[in-house]
Amino acid sequence: MSHHRPFHFRHFSLMHHQSTMKVGTDAILLGAWVNVAHATRILDIGTGSGIIPLMIAQRNRIASIVGVDIDAPSVAEASLNFRVSQWRNRLEAVHADIRDFMKTKVQRFDLIVSNPPFFTHGIKAQVHRRNLARFTDTLPFEDHIKATEILLDPDGILTVVLPTTESLRYIENADSAGFSIVRSLNIVPVEGREPNRIIMEFKRENLADPSVETFVIRTSCGNFSEGYKKLLENYYLGL
Image (cartoon, rainbow, N blue to C red; front, side):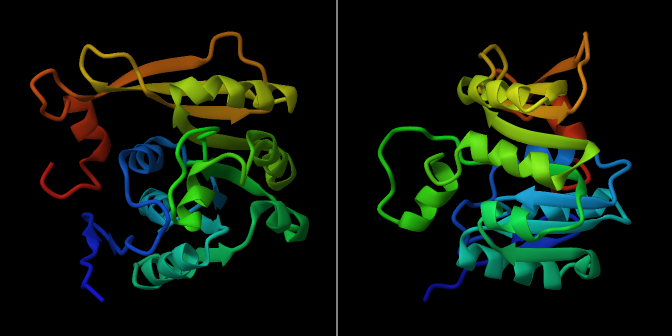
């Protein structure tokens, strides 16, 4: 078996080669942007290698964080990454379908984060595990929201990252369950283009004027934008 090197950040390293979804921009931006200021009990739905819990643990020094994933090798890798981190006592990886997990958890969370499956059609991978992480037929938005309804504190926050094209469907399901957007970040891959991702923060309240920001990853010259550098300077080496 070939040797895989860990992905190094400033304050932690992690393996991600056995996980269904590798370390990527969506998860990293979510982990850096999500509001963790007052959270003490945090859940990551579809944790993969555990990148988001690790990023959150770096910023929030008191919260206990649980990462749940339906894929056993991903959970094994997340567990390893948690054990070797400096926040090992506050991190837990659980192998479960979130629809089963929500039936067994008594304590609610005050923050739920997720980089959920979003593909509704298209060519599926030959590896079934990867399809679990990518396609909504394994976790429809309706089920994702239902789990959040049960697992989130009444005053808690839900934060998800999705393609802009799929976000409208998610917003409709969230609205039907009584959730409204209070803050969002429209992500532009290259300066001058349209946003292709959005991070949305939901609460069980209606705001007449939710906060909307636009965030550019790269300038027209191909360099990382100043906003990108500022958001990730405490995570990435070399920024």
